[in-house]
Amino acid sequence: MPETPSPLLDHIKRRIALSGPISIADFMNEALAHPEYGYYRKQDPFGRAGDFITAPEVSQMFGELIGLWAAVSWQQMGCPPKIDLIELGPGRGTLMADALRAVRNVPGFGDALTVRFVETSPVLRTHQQTAIMASGIPATWHEAFDDIPVRADVPAIIIGNEFFDALPIRQFERGDHGWAERLVGVDADSGELGFVRGRETPVTDALIPATLRGSAKKGDIFESCAPAIAIADQVARRLNETHGAALFIDYGHPSSAFGDTLQALKGHEYHPVLRDPGDADLTAHVDFAAIARAMNEAGARTGAVLTQGTFLRMLGIEQRAELLKTGADEQQAVAIDQALARLVDADQMGTLFKVLIGYGRETTPPPCVSGVAG
Ligand code: SAH
Image (cartoon, rainbow, N blue to C red; front, side, top):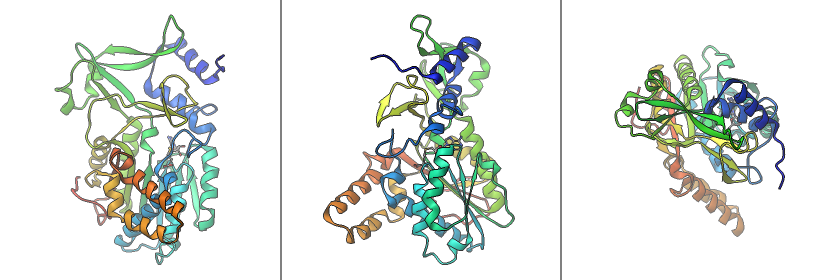
């Protein structure tokens, strides 16, 4: 079958030909965020027909329970008359739509709310607008988290599902003497993209956390996500300033570890990561320890990292499923049970996905916080 020409692949190869191998972060930036051909810029990648399915698209219960979490957080803040509900990377807006519907009956919460979306994709912004239209809650859109103005006496409740995993990572590989960055180059023979090793330098060594450096063996890979750390820092400052709370859900590990977790998904299947930039989703596991550390260093507190299964059970997902089933026919009841299993079971999303809750140093701890740090 003849290959369809890919303008983005050509552009990346030209860039490498001109200036040498690029970092994996640069490659991910091109593949996901190129203004014309980037994966998140040109299409709607979610749902059964898309390349992957996220928890809010699996079941309405996910967004409903997060809405409840936000409403109880607000109550524990003393029901302030105004609140900014900020979502990072809202996708189709399904989570927010379900959350807003679920909290309709919480007295005063709807009137206090302004929704603020952080979204770079124009296509997804229109989906989000449509999704929350029925709620009647005012919303604004922003390119970056720090563009959202701080309002005096208005706490920020910040949520994000599968946001950090889409941010560009760099990879470092342990060699004979030290660490070298893994880069993307062009193979001289085949003309295809391939991984190459950069030079081992003391500067690269310094990027590896001291706690891990000692135990490293040749071939170990360490991943770092500078944009995630920068956003965690901004979020933490906002939590302290506004006495707010934050909830992040993503797949990843609770402590920093070695491993190559970069992956591509296309049509619900794993795909070679360098093969189709712009046409496959690219993600990496989130290092929750690094995010929590950044938040703590900025003065905010964090709860112990929970699994998604534990978190959703704490919020009563099983009872919610039973309630939904009371009005359902048999086929719908089976679908509800399947969705429940998908979200909480250990062999599905229940264990791989983790939950990190952060809050300002003067905020009353929000629901589901245990084992506080910071
Ligand atoms: N939360 C949604 C979508 C997750 S996919 C869900 O669970 O279904 C990642 C989302 O982050 C998409 O909406 C994508 O457009 C957005 N995104 C990716 N990189 C971003 C960035 N740098 N800034 C803001 N949004 C970004």
